[in-house]
Length: 265
Image (tube, rainbow, N blue to C red; front, side):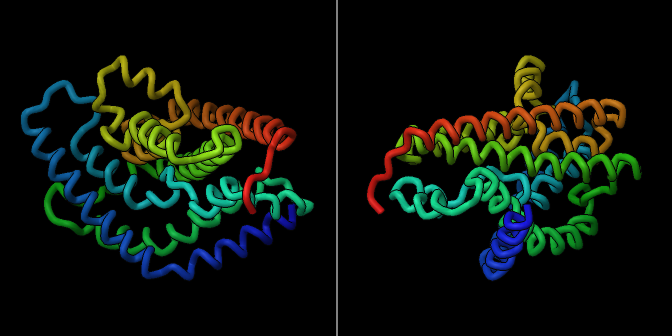
């Protein structure tokens, strides 16, 4: 475990060097959140039968943008390229578990990016005028549970991304699967439309899949749209899904490595 923690620290420090990119991303997320909120404000003027209040929805949007770096489904081009061109062989000859190296690398990059982006937005969002501002958590208990589920959400998306990397061993290219991967996670995770605004039948489908546990669950706990008792049940579901994803990921990777053929390099 010590070597993986050391690798985590190394990748974290490397990611911190890209400050200009992180700052640009922060402004993008800030204006994107404002644009989304303005659309929802206009929508709510004529909407009825809503499963989430406008105040909760505004906070929901802000939280997804503030912690976007932690819970997004963006993959690393360097890892994808190393599998496609054969350079992954240099990782395979090291006395390390490839799955956990990818896992900790993904987490370290996300934490580094988030540590730069989130603080400025957190300082700005609560003080915006009118209905645009970020509201506080529903309660102290909700905030604590939000934090815990957000961390587990980061673990879940990292394990899902590992499955994507493993799939490249079978498809030999990431070009076709990338669009499918991004679109699927964005839709079922509530990225295009918040899950609470979807038809009930689609909500059931989304809540059955792990993508909804990454960002939608923590955000709705924070706003009070999901009560603490239900939030604790969903936390248990997060842990179960994380275990399933990690076990499946390790199994698929070990199976792939037994048959892998290195091309290029």
